Image (tube, rainbow, N blue to C red; front, side, top):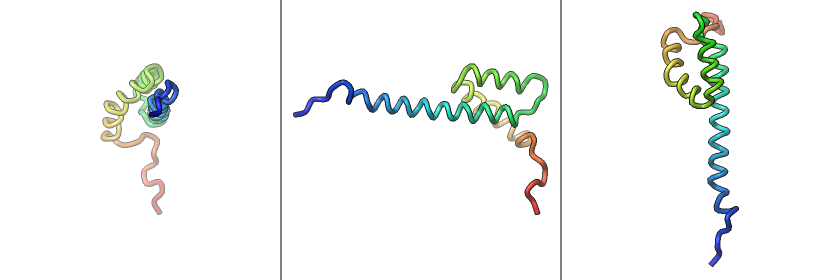
Length: 88
């Protein structure tokens, strides 16, 4: 019977955590860019959300995604879009 040594036992959890960290970073960058480009500049809202996302990493990105982004999309979609753009 073969015994497992320490490096092979730790490989899967380390691989899983590394993959999770990469996905969290990609999501963080996506929310940071979405906020910076599409959040309306009313007062300091955009600046506050960018700072929250920037300093709290994935947690701030999740909060923005669940709380603020749906409100913005319901209120009128993306800011900066030209109405009728792309229509013949």
